[in-house]
Length: 263
Image (tube, rainbow, N blue to C red):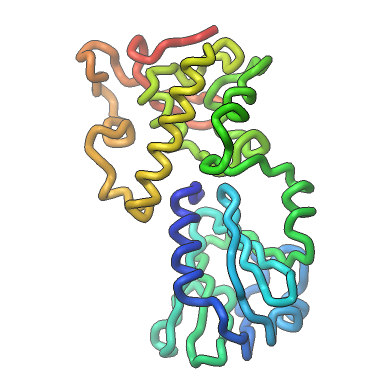
């Protein structure tokens, strides 16, 4: 599932290619990923529209139209955007496409069909309906630290819960816990305020770094935890072994002993 930095990259691509062009024609090859209207309704609603901007909240990208409505692009595991002009460039697993009056096309490619596309008349009402928390890059430190108060679940569960915080995913949650030397299974409510602030700072640093690299994993440093996720690896102290277990329902990597367990 794409996390905040990956969706931010999609947003940059969308904004750089698809704004301020009238949609002359809409082609739906497979309506399965269009969730709240039929394929024919989607064609009717989108034809003649113009994208004027976008808004990202966590892992959700909302494309804004000139009529004040929005198109939700939730990419799932394999969703992607392709902007092209020639038919030969059409992506193999394109599910629908917008043909602009400029002669260019924006196609939505999704091999495994796990994406979710919704036509929304009221974006804010939808955000409230799905109880989407504040964006991880927008939330202020004081509000972030309050999230921990009285929480009995794990810190990793808190970071992954999109109603608490929108955008954090498995890879970056593990990285943040590693950098702050906090065991991901720690009870969130037991973590001291100073350490909560350290988690906040690490989250901002990790997400912004990933965004600046366009979420291209090959450009991530060798000292990030994700490079060490193999049996037998040890923490920088040379003693603490890597552990792999399920925490908050997700496969989790951490260094036992090196990362403190608060309970």
